[in-house]
Image 1 (cartoon, one colour):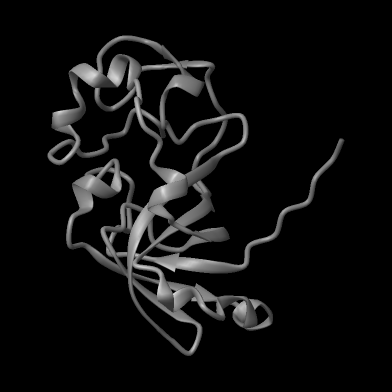
Image 2: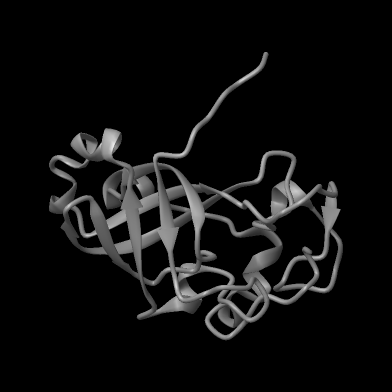
Length: 159
């Protein structure tokens, strides 16, 4: 099965290089960015302004290749890539939940952005707490280091 996916927009952030940027939105608290929606998709933004947070799905466009086992930013032990949020993946798709401040002429102004500048946007979904926040969650290996996420920055391990 072959699939074709095309960007609906472009994400803009202060992060020009992967090294040194936050590794999750929690570590990007207060960092502002914009999401530019291409003209032919702007009608799809109707009613989005009623949501405080949105889910951005995007391409890790500077990621080349992948390994099925990686050492994630928050650990020093090799882990299966699907048990991590590492950017080098068989399908280099990223996901971030960001705060939506406002929408102006097809430009979404967002906060807590942890995404590289000029990243192609694949989709937007509204974050709905009742749907997207399950109860009785296990965090696997991340449970022992999740407090580090607000201070941990990316490095060159996924070049």
